[in-house]
View 1 (cartoon, rainbow, N blue to C red):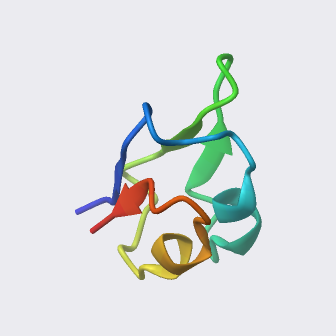
View 2 (cartoon, one colour):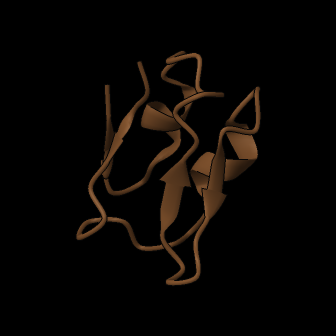
Length: 57
């Protein structure tokens, strides 16, 4: 299972990308966070790191 990213709420700060222990998160061409579901371990670190609560489990 992977985290859910609300693309309308995401501000593109990339805070989540820097804290992901398995590098499952990256920024897409639109400057929004995206998650590789096959890599994500659903640890929730990114949920806590997001300043606008755009990520949920």
